[in-house]
Every structure is written in C-alpha cells, then in structure tokens.
Image (cartoon, rainbow, N blue to C red; front, side, top):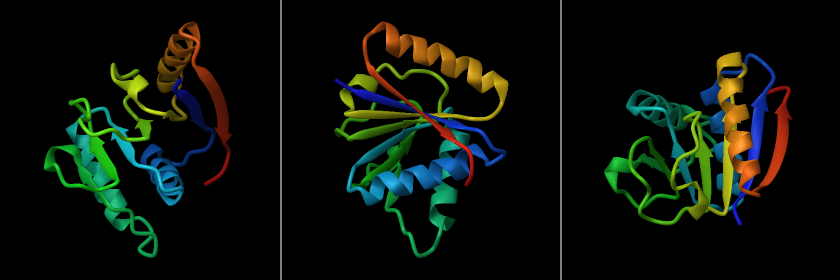
Length: 140
C-alpha cells in the first residue's frame, strides 16, 4: 500500500525551493520521481529551478510532455504512463493516480489556504487506511 508523507513547511522558504531540496534527496536515494504540479506555469517554474538548483547537484529531469527518459518528470495534467516510485504532489489536490506509486510526498506550503487543502487530503488518505507520516520543515 502507498505510504503518504506530509512535509509541512513552517518557514518562509518558497514552496518550489523546498521541493527542489526534497526532489534532490529522493533522487539521491535512487528513486524515480513524478512531480505533480498545479498547472503548466508551475511545471515550467520548477523545471527552470531544477536546472539552476545547486550546480554540483545535477538532477536529470524533464517536463512530462517531452517524453524524455529521465528519472524525474514534471507534469500537471496527464497521468504518468511509466511507473515512478515517488509522487511529489504540489497541486494541493489528491491526484486520481496517486495509488500506483509506492510513496506520495505531499508538500504543504506555509499559507493557511494551502493548509486547509492539506487537511482535506490528509482526511482523504486516512479514511482509506493509507500509512500517513508528518514532517514539520522548520529550516531550509
């Protein structure tokens, strides 16, 4: 069964900056990742940030639409065709395809509007019996 981890940002660190740190950590563990974003603009912004994120820490990635064979894919609309091990969810909503992943990382920004959506996601997973874990992120 899918394991779900909530990463609640407790600082003013931008959401995508934290996402880059999390993606790097997961990638360094040798896992394949699909990042589910809100929309095309957020996908493009994260794509740009990953190109510039720590030059010594290159993370091979691509937008989902490119169909490139890389371990990190970024998308917002389509269900990923190839299996990925970890879903990093930045969309604020539970994607219909979440259960095909071994792990889901729900990133929860500081703003209260995002916290409300995260509470709904937490309740969704809990009602269905998924293993839930909570990680407060207090510093970058």
